[in-house]
Image 1 (cartoon, one colour):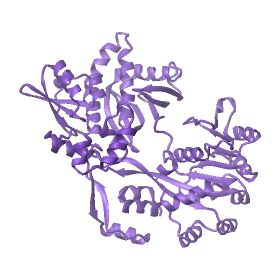
Image 2: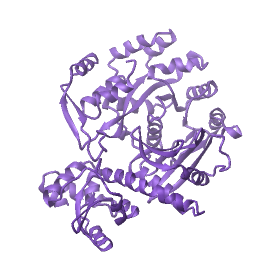
Image 3: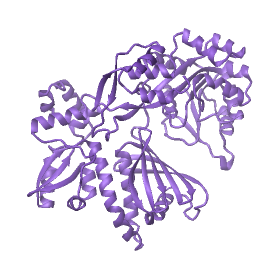
Image 4: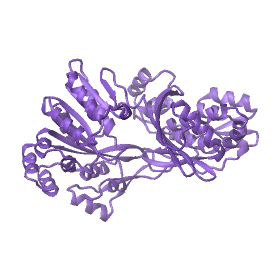
Length: 535
């Protein structure tokens, strides 16, 4: 594989040797090169197609007959990333992520009795096909067995749902009950996709299985319940947050999936522009004061907070957090879980933390006046305090705190800076295509002081399931509270006056940071327009 890619001029010998030396045990070279960003999946497939003469297929709307699935079990398909497609004469056509895996081909020839004719498909394309076709086939089988009092099929079904979620990089699994069936939807890159539809008869045993694992009351179906499960799915340690909600057609369950291997990010991986990265580093290395992150639910605030605290986690500092819930357990940091049922609220936890001689404090969220006041007073008495708040932009933070009932002079004197953050979808690297800007786009760029002639978009391919996007990136707005802004706030300056002042100082707001990322070919104008309403 390394030789083929070198011959095609896609990688150097040094890159191949470095990748071989540092790749995970049993990881294939192609996967390791993809992970390091040296090649794209499209390049890898094109090289294999050209060098080996093996055709490439798209499985997006491929007509797969139900009978074909009987030749390869779902477990074998998932483990080896293969998908049976059709019988051609005496051959069985199999879509493979790695058509050079001759061990798998030999095993399949022995087990099926057919000569195997491999074709190439992308990993995501195969995973979506496995979920779409095998689940449709298995939901019927599972019902019959589940009603004989055998729980094994339900256990297996839940394992497969979780396995698929991790492979497809889903952040949430929605189990939605309808009148006559149950929809399973995955949130991938912030968008919900219906992956499979299960029989209504599976609903009760599936929900009961989830509740048992999460230590919830399985007899209580009329009140909402929350729980969590820590488990390993296919060697991947995951933390699952469970939320059950009674609806007209039964309990809806949402499972938030946290992949513990990839949960903690470095500050350099958070897509800060060079200027915003410098500003933010300056903010979080102050000895005391309050640093706030704002944005709606699911905008990556917690990831940024954890990356910041991890950077500051040194032996000589005492860091204590109070969170609801504790999402990632960090080594060397004291983390307190909020428990309202026994009276341990953010405010109570924060009061107790101050007696523990901390240097740095993180409060999961400022929800009320009491928590806001204690956090602000802690920041004024020599502590560096991090927290999050739900506001639309960085500048809306101060009026929001004042609305909560905190004295304006306390807010202004304690606040070091505010970061507003949003997540937008990243253009798929494999089908990224450039095009000239439209007149409307040119006007938006010009209005925000940016020149651009070309922008990019994703055409849609097997790697991104025809979406044109794969993964997400963050867009930021970093506002440092200097003396001028503090004076303006105390004199009740309007948001517009504050924005004008910051613009004159060369600050970039969410829309400008987003447009720079559009110009760099990381995301599209459509994505940025969705996060910058009112700008």
